[in-house]
Length: 230
Image (cartoon, rainbow, N blue to C red; front, side, top):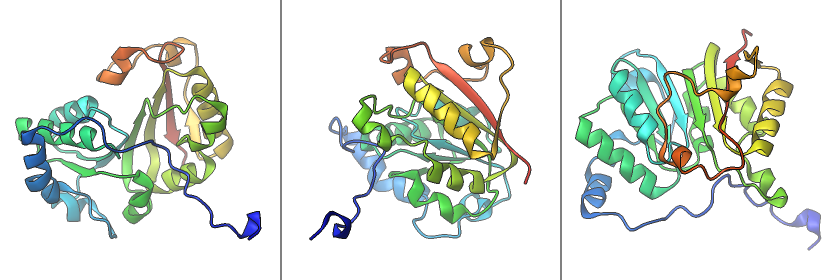
């Protein structure tokens, strides 16, 4: 078998999916609550089908410990939030927050967002948050970073014209690469006019547990984009 004949390996943007053992409560919520609010694997997916009405949809990709997702859900009861996170302990934390706050406006996908994003169809989302995604800092790993041309094609298709995208990272090489890829794509407009626009945390941001650990090599970089009009 030649190298060209070998089957292509899926490029994953995350590592192992299991972390700490789930608590008894988390296991119970995974068995009872998750099936009720899981994003279906099959499409088409609509606001009406997921929430029963034509509310705006927001997307958070890689919500980690779900601090930001839960706060968004509490502050925006009339918005439908779709959270995607491949790590089981992160999904369990989201389930706990949803149950403790009796939130009815969040739906969860416990795997790679690219498996369901196309099922939402064109112009489905009004906002998207990508906060501190896995930076894959080693050069040989950087092909696994989420922000790639094919992903941006799918994201642009799923966003309404004028939709807002917030990307944040504390790894300088990822900030530089992500900004370059967004601008090269052509469907996204960057709004920064001065350094403070990307240095300062947005006023409406909810700090995440990962962010507060300060594990990166720089202060957080905040990149805000708008989906251009077609």
